[in-house]
Length: 76
Image (tube, rainbow, N blue to C red):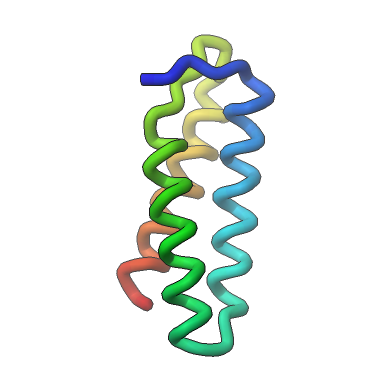
């Protein structure tokens, strides 16, 4: 695990949510594939994050954003 501060943890959650929105706006399979490559890299990085100061709401938001994004990848 990689210990990060709370700001970086919350920024990762925001980034995952942003990627979710981007994924929904892809107009072609090629766009989705390019974004999927980026998403997989970021998920790999962010999945290693740990934050001692994260509250349960922070962790739940992070997990929800991650699961939603994984579901988007599966259905693409």
